[in-house]
Length: 184
Image (cartoon, rainbow, N blue to C red; front, side):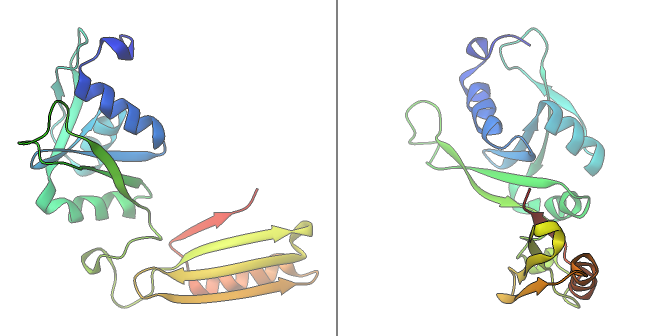
């Protein structure tokens, strides 16, 4: 790959945004489509059964690329999130028709299994809990919080005692979170 400075301005912008969200598949808004490039495009094309094409980016070889229409993105995002991927949504922050130069873009949302709020992406028969688990003192002291972002429901408890691992496991089994965030 050529140095970033030799790439097209749009591709430099893409790489800058991607560098801020390396663990996410970046949905980069270009007009009526969300485009993915390089490794994100390879992953998305395989997982979503999309055609992998290429885009001129200032390199000898075209950058791997795939895209989806922005107005039908929920089903694609739902499929990726269900497979454990994080998706960063990068939107155009100004009207391309009136923008001078490159259109300003920003990540407006990161979607993970525990942060889904769209009804079309959820199973209405069960909660979609995000769990935050803080464990200290060899699991003898733990704080556990379960939050359903789609309903605002929150359950918080502190677990103390020698049987901490068993009590944590029981709480996880009771709430069945979609995602768990842990302290080091």
